[in-house]
Image 1 (cartoon, chains in turn orange, blue):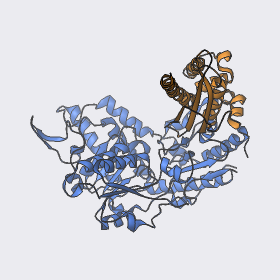
Image 2 (tube, helix red, strand yellow):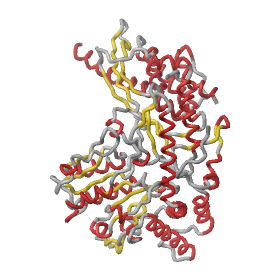
Image 3 (cartoon, chains in turn purple, blue):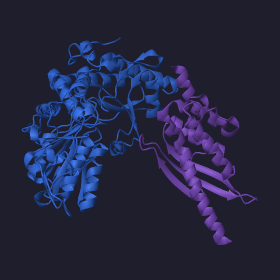
Image 4 (cartoon, chains in turn red, green):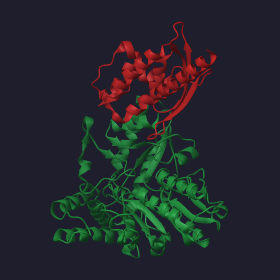
Length: 161
Length: 423
């Protein structure tokens, strides 16, 4: 049994849980969201700051957050920030999709380390249906905030244009 | 060292446990099931399972509508279940026992029909509904909806630091403006047993209606609706060793007569014309449509099973196990128990925190050793907020719980601490 437990609580996950990356709420940001997991009460407040690169593409400049929750939800948020910060939004959304696919795959999806980096450690979570929502909490908040921030960016761009 | 005897423990516990087939389950890793989530839902004795299967195999028919022999047998079994429930709660009349789908529906039935009531029971601006900070969401949200819809005020009893209702401002809360006082008998999170009869007496002095959520009380205390002095009492079948899908609302006849119907439909009418309908008397007035027949019959078997053992003895067993659990938790460094520490003041649900480990992770680690507990806010977010806690782990025992199972929990917590390298 402890093999299953160890597949869920990979050392990488416990490391991120003990020292979460990019934690805390920072300025500037274009969108802030608050997401909760109604079944367990875990919550996250998350901010997204976007900028535009030379080619005119949206870049995820910063993701900051304040989260209360279990090791899986805290570590997933931490890993997520590592994956998306500094990436073009389109590429970060691909990572989101890959993570979602991994979580919904009931343990049958082989994760791509190129895309998910430390996120591959969550492969074991997919075998524990009750914990999938924990792993997705931060990701869902990020997607929501990013979509809102993208709208803000474009409205501002149009206004200044 | 394993304790097998504690004062108050049910005699012949091993034989009683054999009534519950699921307790033989072995889980992943060949761990035996240690079921400490009975406040969430109780396990079912063979007699409940057999009664339901027997009805489905031999007597299944709709009730009150079928003129054939099976219909008569089904109606008889269904109404006999109502009699059993009436005896279980000492209801003065079987017609005061309304079957619902769960306790939430029972509480919503009262709140909704009060919203529609006219005359003395009508609630409007300036009127007040009083609840408590330790309610399950199912005894908060319906009253929020009612007071919002009617422009009335919602007030509540706060909680003391040691997990009891703060009754120090009872005279400010229960005033002539108070129309309803709704409270839980036993808290599903803190475990606290509330002085229901005393609060009912005070509420009646100002003419308020008293609605009691007995979801956690009915499984483990003798519930007597007359002695408690309440006006409405709700509980759910699946926590009293019955099936899911069946709940009970008991209400005093004179109040049930004054309330308008809840859902409209089959079996709740007296006569229907295209323009207008007249309604049946309680309980049928509040039971539109085909009821949960098999579930009601299963509930009847369940309450008879509990009554045969005796609620006094079950209560003593719960107190003995809860005392043993509290003693065990006190030996685990980093554990903080929420609610009263004295087992006499509480029921068999004990919520606690383990420093440095989130309740989800505690529950996951315990589950890996076959120990089933609940982690989260237990549908009592305001009570968690009151104590500055986001969520907790809850171990809840029942009549089949043994001291050895408590030992397994305590050992599991030690394992959890080692695994997460805390303490």
